[in-house]
Amino acid sequence: MTEPAKQGPPIRVHAERCAGCLICELRCSLRFEKAFNPGRARIRVRRLVGAESEYSVELDEGCDRCGICARHCPYGALVQVKEGGGA
Image (cartoon, rainbow, N blue to C red):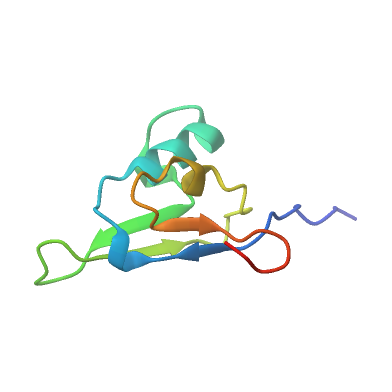
């Protein structure tokens, strides 16, 4: 039987702070794929239709909540929740 993947603390998304820079996607893809390839990241940033500077940010099922996206987000749009619930 295979062991379930370990998961880190939850990552809180503050989409209203997202600037669409894609640093989170780049860092995630580098960690998992060893290449800067946002299409292979476990996080997705998409500009909302009809909005110039509003984005949706979603973590996909393959995300193990390592927190690399939160550590590198320069806008505070991603925050890894510490134990006890504080961000």
